[in-house]
Image (cartoon, rainbow, N blue to C red):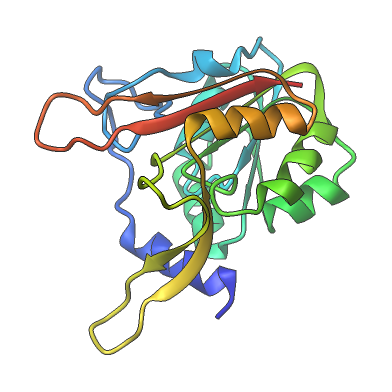
Length: 220
């Protein structure tokens, strides 16, 4: 099973982003798994013209919003289906989209960035011992790394199995993810040369669902 197959399958299952959000905006930034909830693009601290790299950009909604704010928007995803969907939905946006693995892109590009981010994306699904140094080399001095994902299940830390379901007649596809408690994420970032590392769990909005969102941020 290739990573491409797994994430192409996921792309078919994930619904399209709404045409507008609750505020009537056609683009917006969403760190959490809940609509119209949580902080926005201000977490990245980008100025107009700043360069931003989305690792695991999916269908490009967050990246498109940064493009409307005047950022140099670059997205990477291992899934061709996701990249095609992003290009089709946001064809009028100034975004550079690359179909490749996050770590490969970071190691091969000669560009540097003011912000690198991942929303339930590649930072969750790549060994941090390999990915964090690669990100650190591509961030400009003072640049921001920020990422979000589900908080870990208590007692289940490090490399875990994540399942992508298929039809009833097919076994689910399995990808690896890396789960840590907030304090451990902050330690890992510091160990890999980042500064001012913070990690917190944003509570879920009012309603029946209780799982929050882990949001991590650090400076180069």
